[in-house]
Image 1 (cartoon, helix red, strand yellow):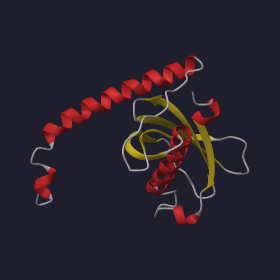
Image 2 (cartoon, helix red, strand yellow; image 1 turned 30 degrees about the horizontal axis):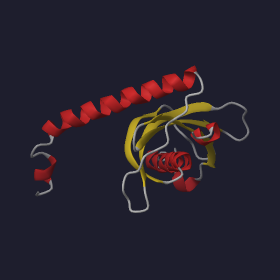
Image 3 (cartoon, helix red, strand yellow; image 1 turned 90 degrees about the horizontal axis):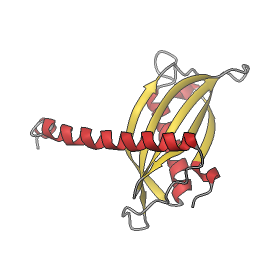
Image 4 (cartoon, rainbow, N blue to C red; image 1 turned 180 degrees about the vertical axis):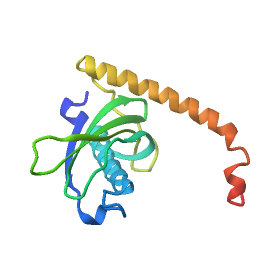
Length: 168
């Protein structure tokens, strides 16, 4: 069993001018990069192994993030399969001079555990300690099923599509 403290992670980062886009807000790509790092840290600590990103689901940019904001990424392992796990991340932003924060984005990362040779390896089963964790696990299982269905459906859309554009 994995300790409860290994299921979650919080990281706070100051948004600096080098992260800004042309409108002065923090660039979405910079936030995605940070989200991927947080998902990696949470998943690798949980699995105690190297992990790679397989999917990013339901990225919602709810409100802008501004230069000068302190952004806190709250990550949690929601679901585990055989070799993959889902990490949910809630992101909040606040000015250092304010006591209130605002929910700016949420998303789900599916990560795959890898062994020393780069092969998929089993992840520890997730201990579900309360009703909230049970609901998060079930929601993660449903998202996994939806991803599989979307992948099956998209296969028929890409027959000769993107490959032809690339000259393949």
